[in-house]
Structure formats: C-alpha cells, structure tokens
Image (cartoon, rainbow, N blue to C red; front, side):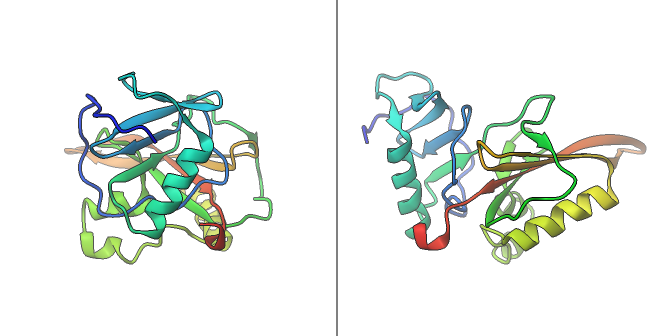
Length: 198
C-alpha cells in the first residue's frame, strides 16, 4: 500500500479497531488510516481523498488491511460505510432473511456521520463501550431491528443484498432545551466476514 500524508483534517482518535471486515464493499464507503490517508470507494477502486497522488487501492488491499487491523487491535484504521441518501438502498423487508454476523453503525447526531456503535458509546462512557461487541450475531441484529420496528415512530427497514447491509431508519422524540422535537435515527448493519475469515 502506498504511504502518503493526507491533508484531510484529523478525526478523534479511535479507542477500538474496525469492528470487522465487511462481506462486501459499496461505493461511498470510507477507509482511513491515521497518519497515512483516507480513501473513498468509487467503482471498483478506492480513491484517495483529497487526491494527494498516493494512488488507488483495490478492494483486496483494503480487505487485507482491515483484517490485519481487526486481528492486531490497530486503532489507527477505520472503515465507515457509505451513508444512504433520502431513500434507503435495497428492498423493504418485513422479516430479515437468514443472517450472519454484522457490525452495527449508527448515526452520530453531533456531526460525526456514521460511527461504529461501540465508538459512539465510548464517547459517553469508555468503560461501557468495552462491553459492546464489535460484531453481533444475526440473532442480536434481528432483535435490534424488531425492537426498532415495534417501539419507534415511522420505522423503515431495508436489506441491500448487493452490499450486504441492513438499514433501519426511524424517528425519536427529543427534548430540545425545553421544547420537544423529533430526530431521525439510522442504524446500518454491515454483514461481516466470519471470524475464521478475519
């Protein structure tokens, strides 16, 4: 992998390595390596952002780097799935298909975009974050999605088989300094390689 210094702004240091290696990549996914650079997936390659001349990476190179980061607890590397637009990708589902393990990403309402669930929790309580697995079983994912549909307003759940992602969007009331408003929440479950493949 080419090594170059990125002029992109640095982000808060992670406490955890990437939670897993995604089963599939999608255009718009982001891969960054602290002190080296950041790449966005476009088509079949990963383009440096900003383009600093370091060159494109392949899916195989990113997959290999993420496997190493997971196995060696390397917190310098991050994978962030692409945020969906207004319409969630995939098909609307009423019941999840048989699923495997998945890493859960959630929308950080403080402007952080999608972040791994345990990283978001670590921002509030580092000790609790260590109790959150990087990858959840298919059963846990099904339970979370079922709870979202049952307990929240305007739930919308889709499954995009081509990218191996389950999206769940819903609204939640919040107290905005004395007056109530609504915030839109998003969970993205990224199907993961089996632990033996990592």
